[in-house]
Length: 565
Image (cartoon, rainbow, N blue to C red; front, side, top):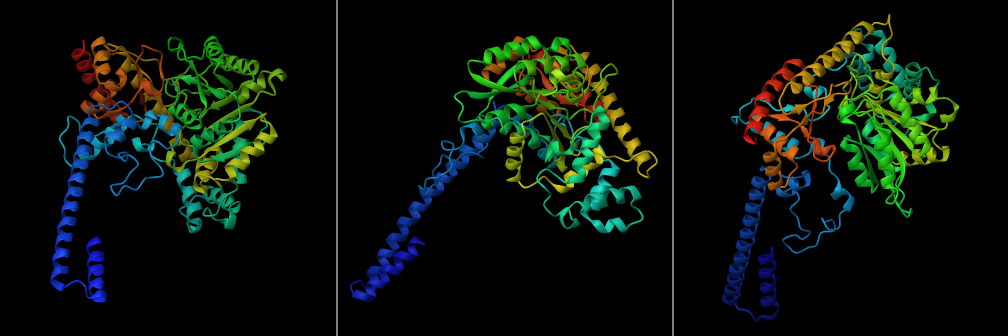
């Protein structure tokens, strides 16, 4: 383009002023062309040099990066320094980006998982490994691990998405009735229309009826808001605590170990993490003395407003006793804390001696002294027996929350319009399933109980397998979908991790994915007591794959311990 503009200018000058001969013009243009070619070659060399650095960084990243951010930087996906080759300055750079986003870490999809995805692609291309598949034991995604969808849920969702199916005699009558009720409450009788921001009304009512059946307590559907999965619901509620006008940063109490959604969101929103440690030696119970310690230590730094509790637990798989929940409620009441109860695994109870108690039920049974305690609880179709992670649906129930605050919450979520109508339809199937005597009941019950029975068996397999290995301690998986074994790493392995500037259990996890194809999450991604090391693994791989996974794991662990003994 530069050459063309130069040629045109020189030619026009010669025509207008009769000052430049044709031969002279050609000579000048040839010289200009040579100069531009030289500049172009220099630019090409710069690009090749940059590409070489990217490849070098990629190779380095594969040698166990410390964090997800480092991996992205080293793989060339975040290479820009804020200036283009042409010299133009970028408006959004690593210097101008929101610093809270840079602080975020989400280990469940961190570097080990990224490496697992790369290995999976290598296997698809015919690469030779000591294994033939990657086992994604890093995340609670049941369908990705082979669980089949619940027929009733998929039939209702399909009919809502494509109403002509309602005319098919292959569709059970209760499915048709269910889908028709949902479509009746949709704008234009279509799931393609926006829903109210709080969700489709009949589904909110069914959520309230579900809670009433579960707890034996009347529930007002007006206190229920549907969300695009519990993740969005939790993030929206936590956003209410952000107060940039406060002289002290607002703090939120979170359990350690915890699901990294909490720590990542608190970092993103600029909220403080007030960490209380669960008692591993007591089945990961919540110790009120430890909560008092955490709260008192945070007083000089944070204005602590809420306590998050995950029950059943993620990542540790514990189920809180009724007594423990009562202690938490008393602690929250005494310290004016809002309770945020993450109860998404309430259907996943595997230990015969354990039982799920909702915070709402326990709070109600504690009498009038606690009747005004603020409580927000969460439910999801991603967990339980449903496993519908991709449909993104859940609900939030607000109890004793100031009405003006609730109005502000509704104003805030209205800016996002609504969650997916199809996700809401799936949620409706979970809270309003087929009833005895209805055409779909028998199959629904068989599928539900079959899934939960299989999960219970896999929970037993995991505990027995890990607990039998030297250097590993593993509490029983009482509930949820995870085990959180403790690995007693040799000092030599810890020293090697220090040399590589990574956490010791990260080193263990990266070695595991490379040697076995088993993708787990290091305990350092969830938080843990200083000097202890863990990894989180799901119990979701189907039974045959679970047995294969454990068979791959055992020799790896033995070799690792021998190497670093």
